[in-house]
Length: 493
Image (cartoon, rainbow, N blue to C red; front, side):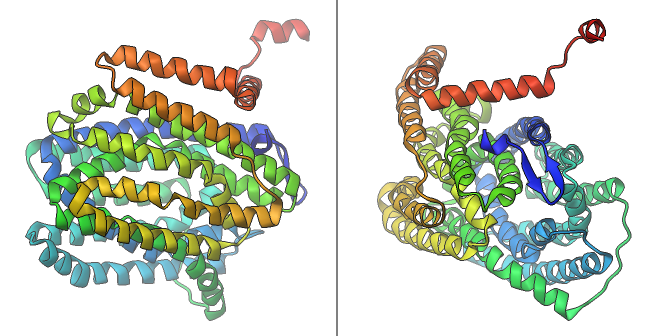
């Protein structure tokens, strides 16, 4: 298992056990995060309704885009910078983060909030965007200590921090939704999350950072930040279709349904955060070894199916029962949209490892090209299809533009050789067909059983590579986490 193999950084040997242990910590954290976010989302959808949920999708888009602009990949720059980070770099990065964050907040309050309220004819949208934008400035204070924690691979502390932030958002937001605060419940949750994140970050990493400016360091950071961030900005802009087109052309309730589906996919794809964090760490250390890179890429396609696509397919197989049971009967229209949307998500996950690799080796320009082509194509297709197919235009557009993933394949193949997708594609086809069949069964337990049997056959009978990877992962897990009983150790002594 290349992604869990020994890697060397300078004179320090990073053992596969440490990577596996870090992955285990992140897994526990993400499972708890999924539980918390799902419970919180259920409260918000049930007590605020799909229209306010659709209104939130508009606010979330603007805040996500503005946060990405304010961050400018400065955190990633500090995280990937080799050697020790001296105080001067930390002070300059901190100062630049504060400048960008508060300029962005002012822009959100005086430009984005009033324009969005006018565009949708909803006065409450002004307060939602303006109030939530304050979280950008508050959260910027925590970026440097969080980077220092993550550079030390202290994922236990990072997990505690992120879980606390989730609780800090969903608890006041859910309570506020329950007592009838409306959009103010969402604003309260966003500000609470930022305050808690900042306070805990400095509690875990008690550092004192002064403001400092150095033109050469700022130029170095910006030279890295702009090209790296551009791919992310283009990707965020592609997510504007729901709030901008669907919210305006069909209505806020339709935008709420789309946001519900996107939220379910995001929550059940929680392992992608673990894969990306560990991939950037490991791929950066073996990027000059073509044979190991190819092996890691091939394995990442399988791991992405096991850890991201399979849980998503599993939920979708009982979605006609689970979605209305969790989110209320009004959420039932989200089910057919979910069943269509998971297909392009599964295909994209096969290529996720290649995306991480290109970012790791400094090929951000290729990612920007891919995102621009994809985003423009999706926008055009959605604009043409929305009058005909409604909000189904979005997953249909995602399916139509899947061939742009060839850009990833072409770039990776030209550097390292051709990756293999056969095993992952076989699993994906069998998995999706089993979802379609099992979701049509009226008895949920029977549908779930059909899905598990079909995928069990594909994992352990049809795909020999997936079978060997599963057994090896279990062996490594047992070796790392299962200890011998005390009396056995004493007897051996």
